[in-house]
Length: 64
Image 1 (cartoon, one colour):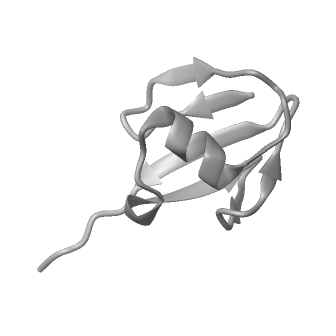
Image 2: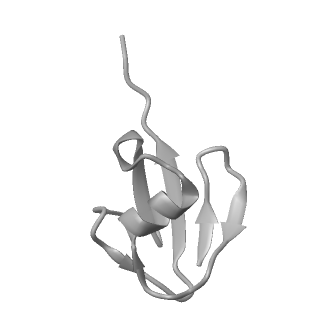
């Protein structure tokens, strides 16, 4: 799987099927702080990803 991290750097990980939550935990990213798209579609943390999926992780900014 190809992953695009919040800083726009790329990473490739094992294509074994996993949940988004598991992928984020493996990367040390708090799921509460990001939104994730897979192949251009926003997905929940329990979505399964594998193979040639492209995962984009975007950090959510909040405040006033």
